[in-house]
Amino acid sequence: MLELHQIFAKQKRMLFFLLAFCALGWAFTPYETVFAGLALGALFGQYNFWILVRRMERFDHSISEGKKVASLGSAFRFASGIAAVAVATMLPKYFHLISTVIGLMIPYVLLLVDRIVFHVKYQ
Image (cartoon, rainbow, N blue to C red):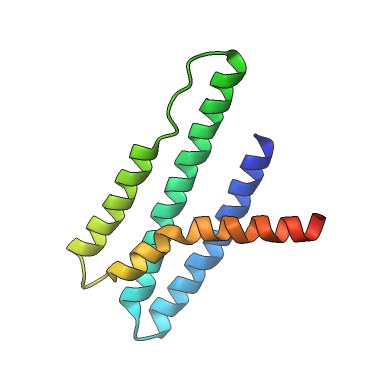
């Protein structure tokens, strides 16, 4: 589980850089809604990743103690994605819907890229 926490910490650092990039894009380009949607989606995506990490810890403890295995929280992550899309749909003046959906997937894309770089570096 230590490696999972290290991956999550690295994800948080990358998210801060992404949010800084979105803030710069929001401030200095005419695409404010696109960058706001990316930031909104990325925040909800990071929340989804945090839920996954937390549930994986519980899953690991349940397996190691021989208890009944709990679910991994797919419903919470799905509801979080719906909430992000609902915010973007209700406030189209401030958030671009498509960029919000793209932003939801950013933490998982960053995870994939990080794992590819890790395997190329250490294999």
